[in-house]
Image (cartoon, rainbow, N blue to C red):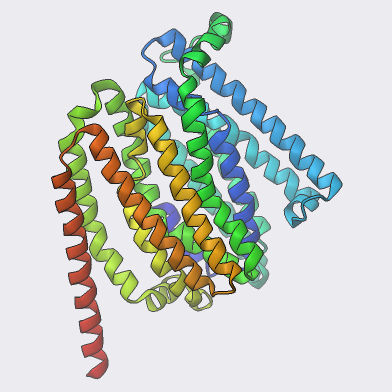
Length: 429
């Protein structure tokens, strides 16, 4: 919510083009952070034995350090050889700042996994708030200091300081002896056996994360290759803004249900999940309809006049983003049942089909709005299919799910038509 409420202020400091380069760097950093632990951070949560869980913690930490070092070496080599033409790699200053962003992003997943195992949701919340607050404070200060020519580098510096601050807050929990993992010396001989025991997370959850990143991050490179810098900036922020609801539901629901399903089993959560879906549909569908009815007017007013062109781009993205907000935490339910293979299959299909649709439409010379529409249709179908799959695997009543989906369509249609009618009548008067 802090990020969402501050966005109208930042968009009046930074032009759409400023977000283009930052979005590319962010895509690289978030991808590295997502795969750094080889997904052993998830195994920490479901492992019942404390010693084995401690071994998994150190395994995930070592993997994060290895990935951070390897990424640093690769980026430095690219910067020296000029193989990959990117301004942020060629510039020594921005490359160094990026490396300081990558290191804590690669180390943090292991610490977060241990927090989830211990049920320390307050620590996770404090970490997320500290990241967002410090990031936005630096970005806003840099934008104000720069005046009309705010550089994207302030966005980069703010993100780096935010990630470092989050790592400090996340690490503070280990100052207490209570609830800490066993010392590395005590479990070092168990690392290999713990890794083999939970190899499923490497075989299925890691590729799942890779294809999830492909769905979320690769479109930025596709749009950057086929469109202008301004369009890339608009698209990156349209994607980011449309996925704010998913970020909220994921942060609130995912860790709690993952912990609960691992401890109590998936079957006990059917009524809870149905109530969550009902609440999200009743609050989200009407808001979605109003924004889609007047995307240019609403976003131009919220973000500023120079961002009005984001309206036609974000409107189609809001539909799959809404469906994703009510399903993006369900992959953890399959993780808790050992069905990571289904997570992987659905993510591969979703990533490949949606990115291909975007690429093909842009390659044929169609407008970015048309390309985003094609991408959005396939994303929506994939997300709906994933929800149905989770219900089938969990043994939940699919008839209840069907009624919930119909309710969402009805609420959307009634609100959308009412908004259009009221607006039309107002204009006539």
